[in-house]
Length: 458
Image (cartoon, rainbow, N blue to C red):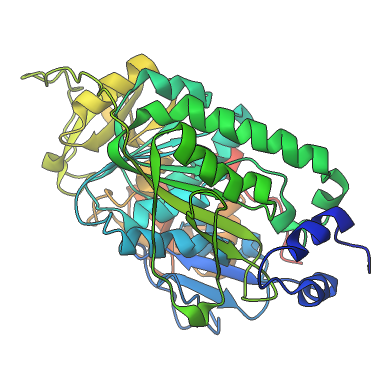
């Protein structure tokens, strides 16, 4: 284990001011890592029965360290979207949003390299609730995970796209905020994923640096003049971090943005060599988190803007009444996706049309359900959505029953002592898990087959 960190990387880091090589190597020899979660403030709070000794992440007011790593697969609250398991260093984006006052007015935000969804769900929580979040992933298998995690988080103001970053050049000046958590050599994840060590090399660092520039150059036309770029990696290499910051200023019309931080947090503040861009490095020997880098920029070069079409005066909504399914249905508009009915917040009709024309969409808004024999068959997405009507009947389950439900197993009629009929919500500790349909002689479990858990209690 003494040679766990590649010597070329250690040598390069050792040249940085204030870097402690011995402490850095020592922390990588320690067994175990840090487990942290970020709670969903819009879902039911953690109940007393969940005995977690919560220890706050100092730069994120919804982040907590856990004393040990539980089996998240066997926690129904995890599947309900009550929290997201996220590396604490990445939660620093919450602090950046507050310091730059990005939550004060609605924005169009783009999370360009978003899977599996940690930073997208964070943006959902911290941006103004009337914002539109476009969350993109290039790889098809990863965009499925991204879409599922956003469904769990429950917001309806999100569009999930599956596109190469270059596709966003078709939307010049369209977004106010762009987050690019760029694919990188991954050295910041050595403790969390030792397999990354076998893949790391100096040539990979150079390859990643070139790819990062290409991703940024291809996508930055979508950022409007005056818009904010947050650039981050989980790499320690200067070539992927501070050198990219200088390149952004020299070639992409960006200027650095300073962000105040508390010195007690242990975040290393650095500057790029040529433009003195303020940058933030997270080292596991300095704080409770893994390796992370972030720098913020404002676009100062002139940027032609996308010519938005004028809003239509009439809507071609599907004919369906949502009063019993969606809270405040007047705040949403309906639109079809195949046989399914979706909702997005009012005022985003033109955005939806633009994105449908320019990009491949994996999901948009909240899928409410589909009509069958004149009645709505509700979608699982609606069960987890914050837009779900609170008056829908609910059947509370204990932990064993909840896990059986999440396995898509059969539940006894005894879980329904009130004799409810029709569509009901299966809930655990006040959090919705999904749909059940109560029939006179049985309960139909509508938990999605592709989401069911396969792990036993052992």
